[in-house]
Picture 1: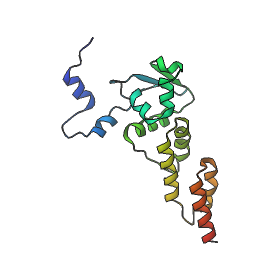
Picture 2: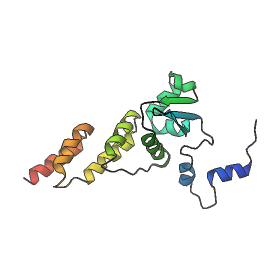
Picture 3: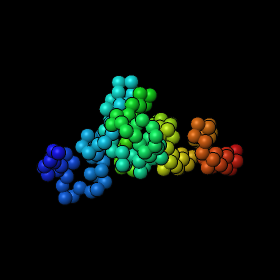
Picture 4: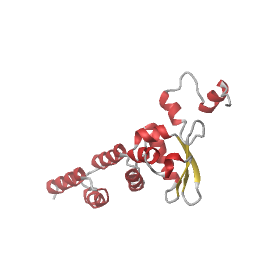
Length: 166
């Protein structure tokens, strides 16, 4: 068994005494170090390294994938040919850090992949993002867009806004 030198570990994680646990965890996104699964994403099969433990505790989808009776449970590589590598990396960053740069431009794509990977906290975050941005000028547009998302609370707030601002 190969021995890991302490300097390798420190260099790899860019560890210093001021680094927070969160920063060290964020440094593991798409990082081959200690990864136990590689996703081959998109038509070009871009390699994205991950850690089953973090994915499993974040998503029922990954729990089922890695601990169910699917072939991926015993494989080191998982092919996701139909997913966008950039969007998948964005989701990985969210799983590792709990943070995501959510905008109206990327919200639909993030929602779709969050649904696929059963990231319920992220779906709730998207709902709250929409709720915070409902204003008189945006009500009809957001009410219409919400058909894709199906958030009852967004419909309720939009209908309330419409009835209060005829």
